[in-house]
Length: 470
Image (cartoon, rainbow, N blue to C red; front, side):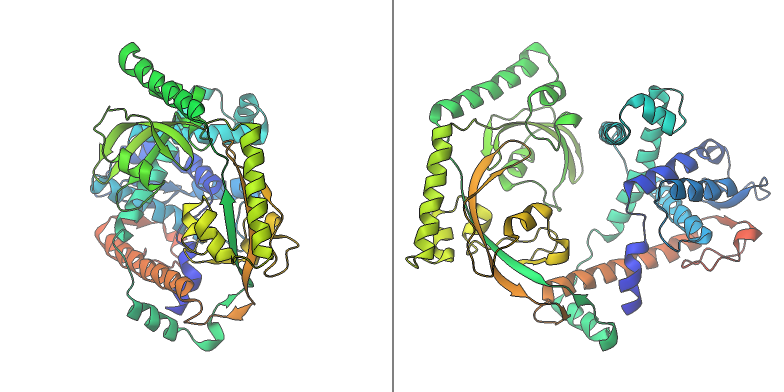
């Protein structure tokens, strides 16, 4: 088990940039791959490094990948040519069996990803012309199509991997056995961690403003249903959700992997394809939502978010209220936990003594070295137990609220302890089990899949059993 703690993060390239660069290179072999039946064509042309099922990897693919990654500063330290080839082969094995298992990827989903990719490229390089020049592409249309094919392959691979491990869980006994299997000298070291508590006061929204927002959303719905206007275009023009606006308000949700707040999910999974909801409220504002596509456990939805405007007087009143709460806590009239329960407008923390939950780990500890920059800035300079002055926080979408925050507990750097660090050890145990399930799947599929390796590549010390009789 201990070896896979170090290895599970190496299963895939996690950088989108790396995946895309590899995709750009390997994509050009697909036309050749589609015309090749490996079982009937054992004599291969020169320059082929490997064949995985219906996919071909050329020697030049590996060389170009290394050059591209080095030029972008994306080549991981110590990564060899053999490891690059191994990653390409694993990626192709996932794709091959995703097709065999009839895993579908909606074109609309991929087009949204393409838009986001190009947006990021333009932000980084300054203009579409500079992007085309940088990637040595002649025109935007063909470039988009190439990125589409690359992303479709990547999503197929991701879906295949997700399918393999979607039902993998660990029991408390498995967590204990996993922890006990790690030699003492190899136990992970956890850095200094903080437990952070906060109380949030949101400014009141007038009935007149809420009515304005509801009517606006209803007018959008009417424009789509009665005038034939595009919901996606409305989202691009009017939605205040920065995470989905550029993609026409689109999100993909999965029944077994909760994403978005409960109110949003409840409405999304209650709709029929093509149906548009009535305006509904979440902690983020008011929404309307339409269901684009149902794909088994997954659905594609689009939404428009409108955030009610806050009057200056309402913001001032919220500031006064939280200042009063802070004074009462400092004067020991009420505890921070009691004040959070009685007065905080943040549902996620008010029933938890005001304690923030780390979205990455699922527990209440934030490792100081990896803490979110926004949170770090808010607690910087605070002594343990000290309560901050009222802080005005404005989200990227424009929501405003006041908060007070304190460091309610501190855990010094320490060697992993089963009781103290159970949540993190459980996560490691789960990843270890997933790693082993994937390894088993790989071993079985490599045996069942046509794999050709050129003799020049057979010297590689692969971590998979690619070498077999050809």
